[in-house]
Length: 256
Length: 310
Ligand SMILES: Nc1ncnc2c1ncn2[C@@H]1O[C@H](COP(=O)(O)OP(=O)(O)OP(=O)(O)O)[C@@H](O)[C@H]1O
Ligand SMILES: [Mg+2]
Image (cartoon, rainbow over all chains, first blue to last red):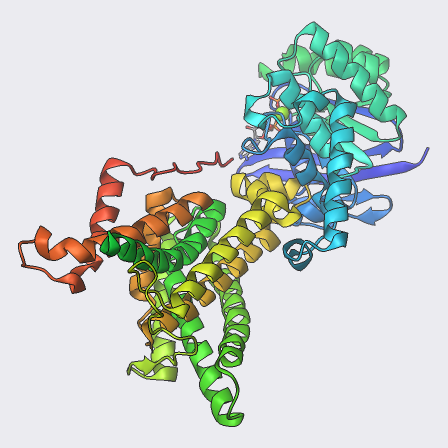
């Protein structure tokens, strides 16, 4: 087992609220790792500190043995981490194709002068990026919508486009925040097939999901957060039997 | 008929300069939601730096052809203004990015005063003659319309730059990053776009256009002065609002429309005001338009490009 990403005693506070407390976990290369927990447990917050959206208050993330840079989200993307959002955050005025091309930004380099001079290198790069972006759109199954402005895509296709845009950054770790939220059964089945393909193609997946069937079917291992603390970790079956987890979901300890 | 054509031409010349400056306002607004009131001063700095360069070169190397002098002025003024635009963003606005909107706005006004005062210290309070390196005297009238080489030069340069900018914004890697950042700079960062770099690039490009506008403005009207940025700055802002602030084609259309309205207005203002006002009052049109747009159509002619910021 090679560790791809490790979080070491990660802490995050919002004013008086301790949203994450000493969260440590290791994600292995090539697995689908589930992050579950009741509403407000801190799952999205974990993504936000991981990707640099929020500053971290303690602890660190180590990717491929190197500590991730703090405070520069785009440099974390360069380290091979890409994400989607619980509430879709596409570039709504850009076309699907342009959204994916924007995701590919970090893997390309054409400068202003090359563009203005329409240099051969700049045009060639633009052509390759377009081609690659079209491939990715096909890969997630929305190739026919390449020229549709993102705001006009159906909800399910917007979710797929978010995945396509994240894949365009060429991540080693793809972090999906409730990708099945709001999807019907057919869409969810399609999503599951897509995540399996992504894993088969060598991308490690970190998955936040409330859909238990999806978690059980997809994940190799699962961590459970409750009130910002990791309360369990193991295979989906192990975690499902864990009394602490059952209690957290039933909300016993919330009574006192 | 001839006056109509003539006024259209004059309007296009002034309008294309307003459009160049308006683009800078609108690009910065589009990406940061900030009205960069210091932008007009970049026009002034561009003109004065170019003037300084031209004066220095023509005394250091006598006999240089006028076109070479003008080009040298541009080659020095544009990068100087680009650097200035970068510094204004870096020092003045960046740390205020998450501050309440009033803070960067007040900073912008402060930067504007600062630049004017610095320019006054460096170049004095007097009006400088900007050399006529391209002929501003009219050529042989064509179809009754008199046009000078400088006017043609202005329109050609301005339209080329506008075309280049549209190409850059709509068809290039940087342009895509700019549009993505304008929609949501946090999400852009999380998708691997260096939002600070893109915002800096926006200021740099806008300032470069303003510097060129400054050189064109000074060349057309043959003067340069430490406070010369104020009026074109305000008019370009009006043009940007008229076109729909944040909207690039809007800024260009707004600039051209404003130039045309002024030019026609100046021709008829005496009649309109029963001889009370003469053509030197043409500036009122810009401000009447600004007032009218803000009251009746605040989103401008082509509509504001409203981004949902999260
Ligand atoms: N930006 C913020 N400012 C203040 N509090 C926040 C912020 N973001 C999250 N929180 C709080 O931190 C806690 C964890 O929220 P988070 O969104 O991480 O939960 P979650 O596990 O993703 O929940 P859900 O399943 O509902 O998406 C909640 O109490 C939430 O209100
Ligand atoms: Mg969440």
